[in-house]
Image 1 (tube, rainbow, N blue to C red):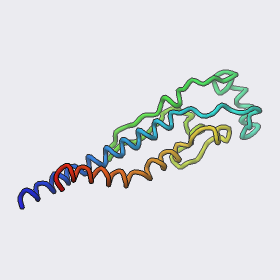
Image 2: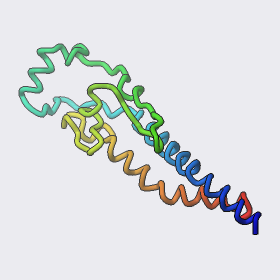
Image 3: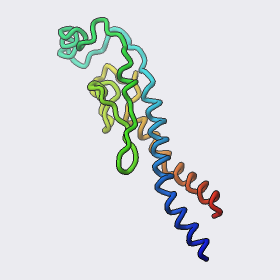
Length: 147
């Protein structure tokens, strides 16, 4: 009886570790997808507004020059950060929300719509898999420990 109790305690201690590992792996898959650059724009550019078009040209391509060339700063800035209960996927590039959207799925600029994968869509896709992946991983640990 003591062996069974100890085994259950060991399994209970493993469950949070298994969950964190699965969250990390889901974040890693999402990060990999978010690092894929979007398709090149089609011309003529479909500006969101005349004001946006004028601002682009008045600021020399929002500071990136005209014609704008890709720097890959956005795709290379995705990071997985450890937080109290797991991990967070972050990108500190100021224009991320305009190109890949925000945590609510809102895309800041229609110019990038359909060309870049949205942050929220990718994260949701990976999070949907988590309950089953965690369940499967706990089953593996339980079998390994003789349950």
